[in-house]
Each structure stands twice: as structure tokens, then as C-alpha cells.
Image 1 (spheres, helix red, strand yellow):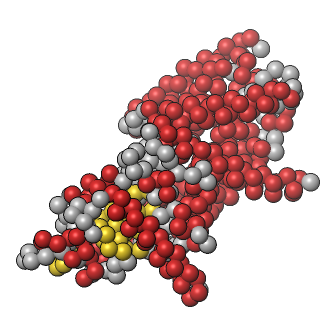
Image 2 (image 1 turned 30 degrees about the horizontal axis):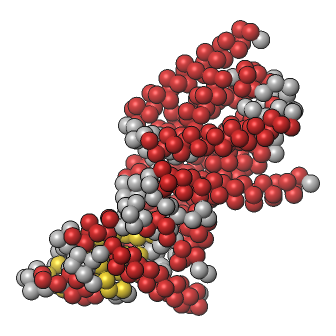
Image 3 (image 1 turned 30 degrees about the vertical axis):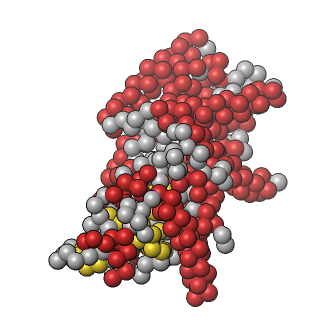
Length: 144
Length: 286
């Protein structure tokens, strides 16, 4: 079943980003990049989403929020960490409140580097995530 | 034979409806200066949703959506097979009400707001739909669509006001701006996702398929106004359906969402003025 690759719905969550990456994520929706070409929709509802796009590092306060968003998403699901802060904590890694990259809390599938990550890189990361999404669905089917 | 026709309608109506929705998304994207998704995108979405896990809030939550689908399918079969237009409209209302109940059943604040707005929308558009049925009866002396579309003169000659009123309220039914305050195709991060908020996987797919049926129902209502016993009029009716659908897409992309008070009052004013005057004039001359 390849349809899962043709209609990825995205949930975008801002961890403790400086908003640089968030603006680039939203830039993907503009006519210049138009991610709806690939059937990508920015949903804003974890129950509808297939891909969790997290920008910014995870801090002590948003750990439960990130975990809850992930748990509310229906299987199969993929986590994409966008920007260097989401990958490793970036320049905020040494801050007293910052835990580090998203992978400290959630199983991250795709790392998109950059500060800020360019829209092309974000789209590329999501497309890489789609292959993982398809594999996860195959595994889920075998279990059933 | 009846069973075959029924099965045909049940299978073909959502295919046509899904295709219309896909074309809608492409045209909307082009109007916004984007390339837009493939035409078959709605089908990809639904097939994907069927393959996904469905999280269940409670058992009734899911039940209402399926009941809603059944009533909407029933409406489609009646309308397309030329049955009683009044029965079809009542079954459609029942389908909408079950959908609203599904929103309430989840106990989520977003769903509840969506349900309340959906109820308001039903209140706003329902009088006009009923007036259309009454008008069709006045004009063609029958509630049966098979009789209405076999008349010598199209209903639009008698009911221009009712038709304009119907096109006006179709924006509610097609979930288009400026009347998309309960559930919109755009605004994915907004409260307008309403009733669908707590649905996922297969249940969300059912909601989407229900909407495809509703697209066909609304266009069938437009069709009735133009079709006569003359075969060429049926081609003309299809063209008018396409034109009305394009008009709704254009309005959707050029208008902002109205507040519920404005949506409600404007719908009732249009119903009261165009619908009622049309019926009064018609009853005076016939």
C-alpha cells in the first residue's frame, strides 16, 4: 500500500525554538514551495497527523507536552526533528533548562540539520520520513 | 434491477464526489497561485486514513458517524434514483443531526463547539431547503423527482428566486466560505476543524466519504431545477451543476468567514425574501 506516502499530514510543534525554523516550516506552505503538491497538509491536530515535525530543543517544561502529542497520534507515525536545536540542542544545549535534542524524549526518525533549516531541507526530510512511515505500516500490518 | 441501480449509485456517487473534491482542491490551489495536489488526492487521503489506527473516545462516538453515513447514502439513493425529494431532504437532515451528536459524544471542547456551530448552520440552511421542496411541488405538482424532471418546462422558470436562495445556502452544505464556520477544508489549525477533532483513522475516512455523498446530493438538487423531458436539457443541467460548483469554489476563495450571527441572519433573509416572494408570486399565478 503506497497511499500512505501520498498523503502525509503534518503536526508542527515548536519546542523552544527561536522561531527561525518555524517560519521556514510555514514557508513550505507558500506558493513558492507549495508542499500540498505532495498531499502534505499542516493539520495542527495530533489525531489526524502522520508526521510530527518538531522545531527547537526540548526543555523541562514541554517534555509532557511533546510526549502527549506523540501518544495522541494514530499509528503509524514518524517524528522529524527540524533544525540543529531539535537535533542536539544547538547553541542552547548548555542552558540550565534545556534537556537537549528531541531524541532525548521521543524516538526521532529523521534529523534535518540547519540553522535555520531551509524549506528544501525540510521537504527533503519529510519525504525521507515517508519511506520510514511506509515501513512502519508494513510492520504494523504483519503484527495484525 | 432496482438493487443493481442502488448498488451502482452507492459505488459511483462517492467516486464522482471524491473527484469533484479533488478538482476543487486543484482549482482552489490555482486561484491561490499554487500548483496544488493531484486530482486524486482525496482518494489517497481516505485510503491512507483507512489504513491507520482508529483511536476510539467511546463506542457511541464512532457509532454516530456510521449512522450519519447510512442516512446520507439513503438520501443519495433516493435523489439519484428519482424518488421523493421531501423524504430525501428529511433523511439528509437526520444524517446531519447524527453527525452533530457524534461531535457531542466525544465530550471534547473543540468537538462541542463544532457541534454547536453545525447546529446553527442546520438552522440557517434548513428553511431554504424545505422551501425548495415546496416550490418544486408548486411548480411541477409532484414531490417525485422522476415526475419533476419529466415535465415539459424546467422548474427554474417558475422558481428563479428559490434557485438563487438554494445556491446561496449550498455554501453551508458544501462547507465553503463565507459559511464554513463549523468545518472547513482550509484552516487546519483552527477551531473550525470542529466535530472532526476527535476522529482519526477509519472514522475520519467515513466523515470524508459522507462529504463526497453530500457534494453529489447538493449538485443533484441543482440538477432537478433544470432537467426536463427534453434530453438536451439534461446536458444543460449538468453544465449548470458544474458552473454552480465552480461559483462556490470562487466564492470560497474570495470571501472571508462570517460570524455566526451574520451567516444565520443572511441565510434567513435570503430565504425569507427570495424564497417566500417567489412562492407567493407562483401561488398567485397558478
